Image (cartoon, rainbow, N blue to C red; front, side, top):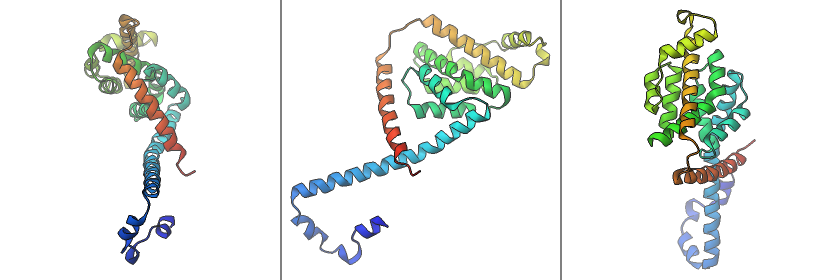
Length: 232
């Protein structure tokens, strides 16, 4: 209603150019600045409108597996070492947690920061994209497929993973459920990732990581503004 009342249309448009020419340049500059602010505000609103459902899904998915969304986000930030924005972390977590249920879902959620840390270590070692490696680990764990995990350079032996879990549960491998086999792959992946991180040692931070951290900081600021302008 405000826009309809404030913006001249129809027959009022005729003669607009003549009036525009008569406006002093400083006034035109002020109008342009205001228009720029309005455009920026609208862009922020659109940005925030897309982020709100992501946050709500994150809360729901973490609650469904019995973990705290706030605690998980804090741990993911630590695993990313500030190189990934909060909502990118939330997107990755949502991708992992969709379809993850029961005890596997809970353990997967709890160990997701370690999976992300493993993906970052593999990216350093191989030069591959962190997102691709993280998605490979997530898909490999959920499907109990070492072949997908192999994309990261982490090699798992499914039989050994199953035997290790079966022994800890006082079961035979044949008695393991499908969910327990997923947990076995999860545990083996996290352990292999920890070994990879340890083998790399305290490698010097790359320029790419420094740039990623700066970009993540800026993105977090923009996302905070975008969320703040959303209607209650």
